[in-house]
Length: 172
Image (cartoon, rainbow, N blue to C red; front, top):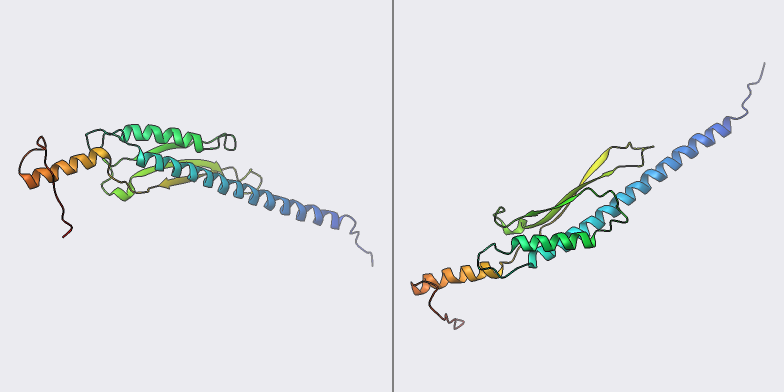
């Protein structure tokens, strides 16, 4: 009986196993980089949302300071986003304005961006959509506070806000 020639079988098995192992290493490395990019974008969104929520230009209208607050938030977002680590960042910062959103818990900023899932060998080159939201709630602006105080004084004193009125709370 003639014996089979098995020369090279271990080399082929090694190459196949090694290439699969290296492929999985690169896949998990790219996934880790995607998670890191997501955390960096989320931090930038959070910092911009904080700037948006405290931005106030002391206007007398209830929502007068929101356009200026959003401009400040865009600057803070760009400052905190590490563009050197994410050169192909395609996200745009968007706002949930208090005039549009009725519930103050959903006032804040958000962004959507895409990243390739992997480097292409394993996992494909399709892009995955990510979304980062930062809804911190919103305290009333100075304009909103002034407006609501005027309404309260007008209700109590039965007059307009043009007069000076002092409300006293004795704590009881």
